[in-house]
Image 1 (spheres, rainbow, N blue to C red):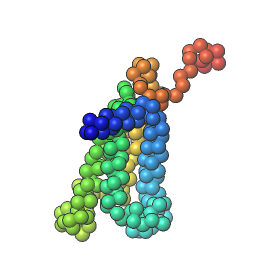
Image 2 (spheres, rainbow, N blue to C red):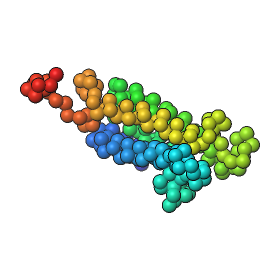
Image 3 (cartoon, helix red, strand yellow):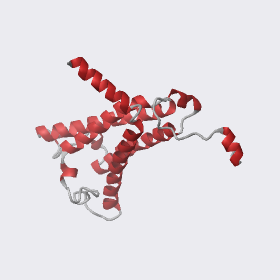
Image 4 (cartoon, rainbow, N blue to C red):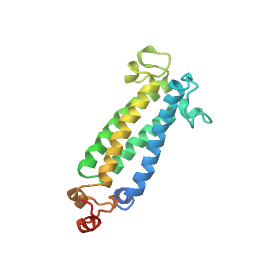
Amino acid sequence: MVETQRSGWKAFSERLNTDWHKAALMLYSVVVVAHWAEHLAQAFQIYALGWSVPEARGVLGMPFPWLVTSEWMHYGYAILMMVSFIILRHGFVGRSKTWWKVAMWIQVWHHFEHLLLLLQALTGANLMGGAKPTSVAQLLIPRVELHLFYNTLVTIPMIIAMVYHLRPSAEERAMMRCACALRQVEPAAKAKAGVA
């Protein structure tokens, strides 16, 4: 039974990094970029509109305030992002794999920060005896700015990885097991079109 489950997971993971890689990456990208946009909206509300931090809840946080205040939701999202980076990394090769791993390791740290926040919320024992849950880096940088920074640090190398993944070198394309790469224009077609 355990072997069947393992082979079932292995088969699913294999499909996620081959046949379904492009669809999985597109879905994941939409979620990550939308989350980043929420952090940008929150910063805009604070710095451009002059709202207080409790008022600035991004776009979705306005009708659903618990999205901003729930440590469980933040931790759940952080672990989902981390696990997705780990699972989807097997479809990357060459330069794209390097950048994907950079984003993944930043997300691993971001996940640990959210785990620390969740544990403080659950136990009531806050870091440095503070009034509310505080992450390690939050001792230096306020939470709104810190999480915008973290999400930017994760999103930018992820986008670079995706660009390299969509536009691989010939050597990288030969190593790829998925169909994510954009169609390559053959040199003869380029010459005919007058493109160098």
